[in-house]
Length: 117
Image 1: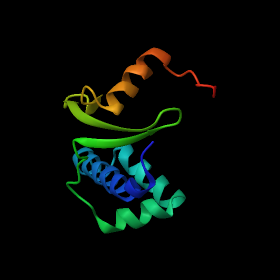
Image 2 (image 1 turned 135 degrees about the horizontal axis):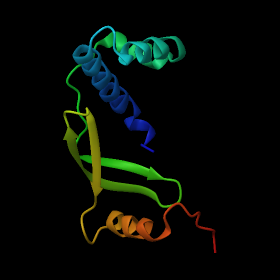
Image 3 (image 1 turned 30 degrees about the vertical axis):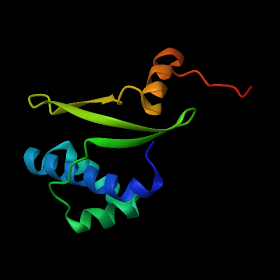
Image 4 (image 1 turned 180 degrees about the horizontal axis):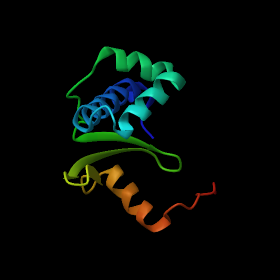
């Protein structure tokens, strides 16, 4: 979903967020089980976890790779529900851009596959 060159950044953000949940929820939280399982199954996770990244956040602008439409550059707004510890990500694109046109097309085609002409 994200360009390969951005994977290290996303890994650090996700590990930072997991560390934040673990700190907030404590040693008896489900986050401990997630960390333990990932350390056993993912070398990349274990390496990033050992770096102790904290405070990493996603930027407001993202590049996404759609399997049918290719790259989209979007603005990402995060809406947080602190009581449920949930975040809703809202993606928009600047009107008049290719990414905006692609998002509009997605609202029509949904999950359909486009066949070559």
